[in-house]
Amino acid sequence: MTAAVFMYLTKAGICLCVLYGFYKCLFAGSTLFGFNRRLLLWGVAVCLCMPLVPWTVERESAMQRPLRVWNEKLAEAWPESGSGGGAEAALGGELPACGDEAAGWIVVPVVYCTGTVCMLLFWLLGYVRVWRLVKCGTRRRGKRWTEVWTDEPVGAFCVGRWLVMNRADYRDFPLIRLHELMHIRYRHTWDECLMQGLVTLFWFHPVAWLLRKELREVHEYQADEGVLGQGIDAKTYQMLLVRKAVGAKKYAMASGFLHCSLKKRVVMMLRKRTNRWRRLALLWAIPLAGGTAWLFARPEMNVEWLQEKTADVETAGEVPTDTVGQERRYVEVEDGPNVYDVYINHRGKVFFDPLGNRYGRKGEIMMPEQVQEVMSASLVKHFARLQNAFKAGKRFTVRITTRVETKKEDLQAVEHSVQEAVRMAVAELSHSYRPEDVQDLLKLNMAYNKPRTFKWIP
Image 1: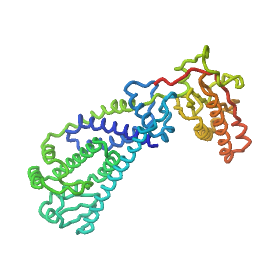
Image 2 (image 1 turned 60 degrees about the horizontal axis):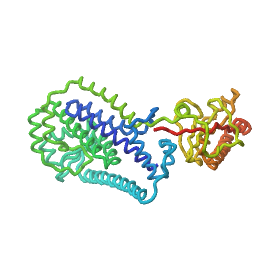
Image 3 (image 1 turned 90 degrees about the vertical axis):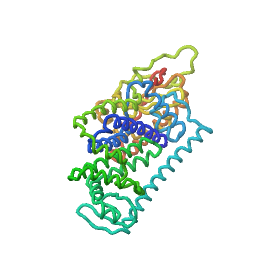
């Protein structure tokens, strides 16, 4: 599990870098504030979801190889999670790392979790301070917001529907109040919550902080535009910004009046409005997202691909003894949804097709003892499909393929796991179906291919 989490953080971090570069190159200087805000928010959501999709390709390229190597490195560092992620590794992969190097990797999750907890405590402390300020201040409820006046020397800010201001600022600077009301109107606090979650998960990633900074700037531009849209003179408002250029920034989770560079805000007010056709530049995100998905894609390992891309070589000369032997019969079994394929390599690793078909579905690589649990779950899940095959006169069959170098004890371990998987599936299905019908349908029939020379080519 640990390796999977850090692999997700790696892929999501790459997506965030792509998003930041895309935004800075095409939209950062535009006045399409509402569009930019949606772009950043939806972009972050896509970046967090994209690594969860199992992208696959037929062949692995040189650009995709570093991510696979990094994934294998993580699996070796944390072997307890490496077994679950074996589908990403080659059949001929090395054994998990051990010793001082592996011990050093143990520190990484501790450091990450410590940083995440510290970030959560930081946000929690900030909200506690805001709550104490709201509780001690004078409150006045409006239509869609609540104003809080305080005697403490704080800059104006808003959190949710709470608008907090110093009494003197409320009396002397009504435009500041209007600016904060624009933050409430556009619901910028919810954007802040999303970005707080982002920087909590990616506190180590500078781009996460930069994206949060960009979104905050968009918030200020959008609030300034809303103020000027109320008929306020631009020069008067800009002079107010200059007068309030120095202020407190204690409440990092809030939308504040001075959270953005003064120069940038003034320049943005004076900038000519960006043509709305500029939004069509978003179409560049399609090939960019496709390229990122391709970078994450892993070679699809399925039985059809293995059969087409590997050599079927008869054993000859000085080779180890055939582990299948004469006591097991070689039978040519026709492909079908009733056939479950199991490949065993020379290192004892097993490639198992949990769907038992040649429809381009992704299989899994595991150790022999894992076959029992995975196969049992597959039989229960796809029992209805096996019933249809049984009605068509097709028997449930487990087809085993070995290499000549496969050890006999590995083959026996797989056979035992298959038998136990069928027994477990029969016991579970008997609660929902007639036990006699289940036993007849899942009567185990193991067939063996002649030993082959096969390996996964990255």
